Length: 70
Image (cartoon, rainbow, N blue to C red):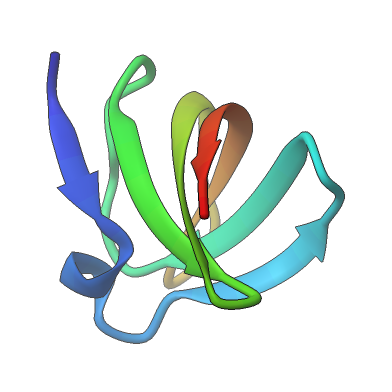
């Protein structure tokens, strides 16, 4: 399992959020299937990349919730 933390993206921006899906704008490509640890609203959670779409100067990551830890 390939796991990274959201801190490794540097200037990652959340562009859409629900309790089960997340869209991040990041500066580098991330392979589909990668697990990303994200801290949102004070809780650490694991998300799985289901899409990575290239844009002009960034990538848009589609993430789905894998599990939430409090």
